[in-house]
Length: 180
Ligand code: IMP
Ligand code: MG
Image (cartoon, rainbow, N blue to C red; front, side):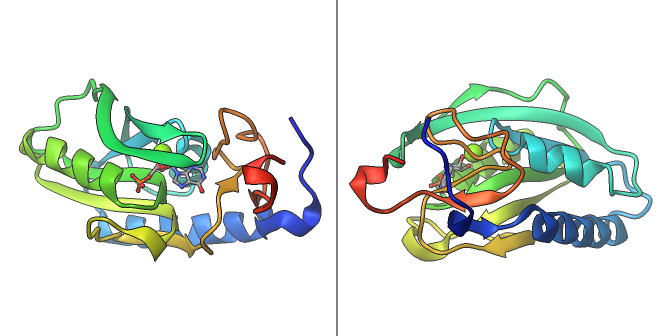
């Protein structure tokens, strides 16, 4: 695994932390008196979700889903549900917590699946939006950052399972076919 240089940092950890606190504040205001289910989309959202919930002044339930479509930097365009929520979602207020919205296919597929479970409400919280190649429209209710059209790693985001542990978010080098 090649090293990343500091010049590749797009969102430093300090900025991410500040933004996560703001998002948690917005969510807490909107869900006062509610007991929402935060549904983390594995694996990319696990760091974001863990930080976010510790700044919510709310009682929440946590569950996860896993969908798959990416291999390396390229989306296969087909999204399948690999792991379903274990909590019964009927009548629940669901907040989907995503790392990145790119084509929008993952979020759209997940929302369709969740609706079939008759929750009371569904909202989407995403750390990063990459709105440059949408193939379907997605409403992001709580958004951390809009990113340039680059492949990002760190803070839970991976490139073939590497780099998730990094505290900052980096853009992969654009040359050499995405190799670092
Ligand atoms: P979408 O279905 O194209 O919106 O892709 C969403 C999923 O692809 C995200 O949840 C990420 O897991 C993954 N993804 C998209 N862009 C990136 C990136 O720049 N770095 C890491 N993962 C990404
Ligand atoms: Mg993801």
